[in-house]
Image (cartoon, rainbow, N blue to C red; front, side, top):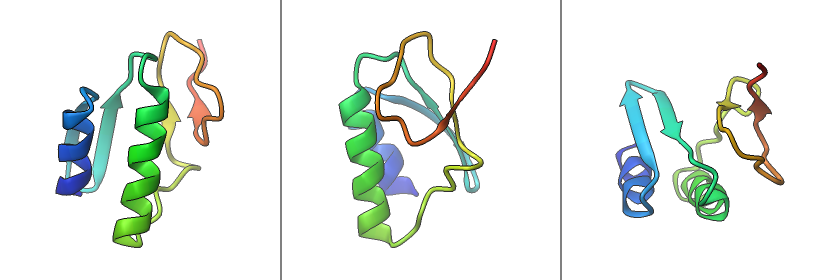
Length: 72
């Protein structure tokens, strides 16, 4: 998990993590970077992010997002 957090930070994507729960602070400007980092993490670690329990909270549209979107 630490490598995922480091890579997100390198890409200027904010994070907050505790145990195996992670919040990604997404501003909508780096959706390709975000999805690439998540895919790389899954491939390298063999772990799959639980997309059914993951939600994107953003003010911008995120195309091809594998996660649920928060609702108003």
